[in-house]
Amino acid sequence: MPAAKTAAVYSGRRRRPRPGADDSSGSDYEAVQHTLKVFSEAMQQAVKELEGLDKKCSRTADEASTLAGNLADADVDGQFVAMTQDVAKEQARAAKAVHQMLEQAQQAASAAVAVQRAHARMYGPLHRVRKGRKYRTPKPGFFQ
Image 1 (cartoon, helix red, strand yellow):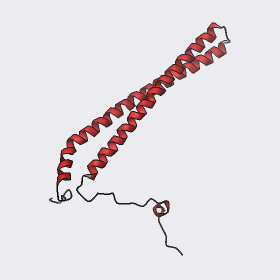
Image 2 (cartoon, helix red, strand yellow):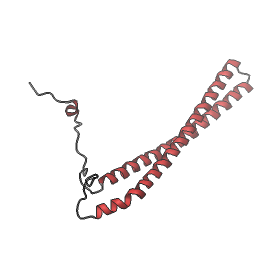
Image 3 (cartoon, helix red, strand yellow):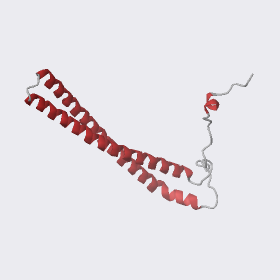
Image 4 (spheres, helix red, strand yellow):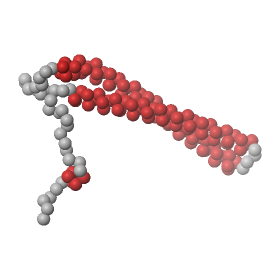
């Protein structure tokens, strides 16, 4: 009978050691910078997509409102005018929500860039020193 194996082994998700985790090559700094860069780019892409969605939602809300007015001018049954006005109102509400989401995404994108720059400013010089050394430095806490 085969030995019991964990789900991680079957799923192929074994926990592998991080490359460079035990040396002083600065890979942690580079990994954080890479993660922040990827996140920042993703947020900027989300902002672009939300800008398009914002315009489309606003345009759809305006079109629905115009249609409701046109239906009323054409003496269409009041029930249909009211339903179209309700749709226009909900479209405007959705457009407002998308616009708020766009503003939040813009703030998050700006914050991501600011965090990346602050991290580089705070830890970049240390990274350059550690990377330029010939010998590895001790792990944090070694001298305590």
